[in-house]
Amino acid sequence: MSPQHLRVLTLATNGTWTDEFQLGPEQITIHGHKNWFIRKQRLRGGLQDGVDEIEVNNGALSFSILPTRGMGIWKGSYHGLTLGWQAPVQGPVHPQFVNLADRKGLGWLTGFNEWLCRCGLVSNGPPGDDQGTALTLHGRIANLPAHLVQASISFDKPHTLTISGIVDEGGLFLGRLRLHTTYSTELDSNRIAIHDEVENVSSQPAEMQLLYHLNFGPPLLQAGSRFALPIREAAPHTPRAAEDIDGFDVYLGPTAGYQEQVYDFLPATDAEGQTLALLRNQNGDAGAVLRWKVQELPCFTIWKNTQTEADGYVTGLEPATNFPYFKAHERSQGRVRMLEPGGRWECTWSIDILDSKAAMDAVLSEIADIQKTTQANINRMPVFGPPGV
Image (cartoon, rainbow, N blue to C red; front, side, top):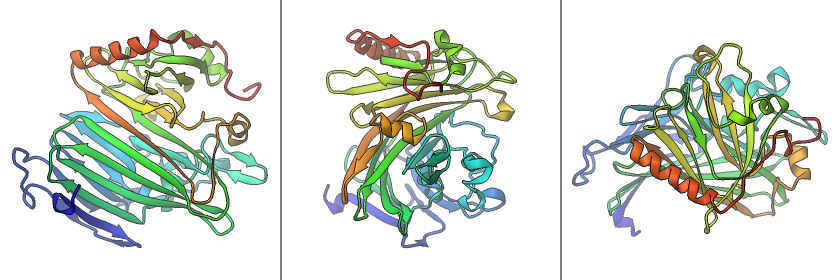
């Protein structure tokens, strides 16, 4: 796309930020589109003090990106349909208030309340000692700020709003991984496209893991909500999850005392290596569908945490490079990526929000067509984790 057809604005570079900013129809005329905008603000007060938020609204779908928190997405909305969840943590939480080493490496949980949160880049999964290196829950990337952020709009059809950012993870004697992330959405569409590249900018080979924690609460999550995915192989993550393996695709309403259940999947794909996953409400007239390439993100996990709303009623749909077991086990299974100096890993995936039964039925038919080509192997006990998990 030639420069005259694209307007790019730098919102942050080398620690210098534009604190308040808005781009919309008042500044740029796009024929037939009057309700879009890109707006940046710095949040004040409480645990959110100092967090930068970039709200992107394409006229139908809006979502709030948090450069301060690893370029995650705090929340969203589509035609009034709430996207995200009501976490016990009031936020978004500035990383200065998150001690990742707290509670034996579980401190990540004190900042976790996003709709989309990345887990990585050096590691994800539970905390522990990895050959003398202390790993904390789900890694560091979600609590690291971007140092370059740009916003752009294309004047050519289809008119696209784009936010890109760069986040570095590393330090002296630790190597350095660099996340290049781009969110794009067409005006008046129901889709967010995500393109990520992880680059090893050190002079030594580096390990890399990445899991996308996409979280939904009400109204998409409710009693009778369902999950669907074309399956090559599936297994409970723990013996607790094995208790309800026959109902892994159905959700309870808010349930006091519920203990989380996690299920692991190797998805089946179409002829081009693409797959998809669907979360739909009880009536089957609202939901969200994820689409990705299994070569890039071979593992998929469902996190079911249907405890009371006050305690965080939520489910996570999680495409990833690996399963969320401890890194040493994932390394032994060949599910930890190795990047040579200057090497890159990349993926492109998308989230579509659906608000009609017809759209839902079309996606279910697509999943069924893929499943017809593959016999689903459903294990009743954990098989992807270490013995005795």
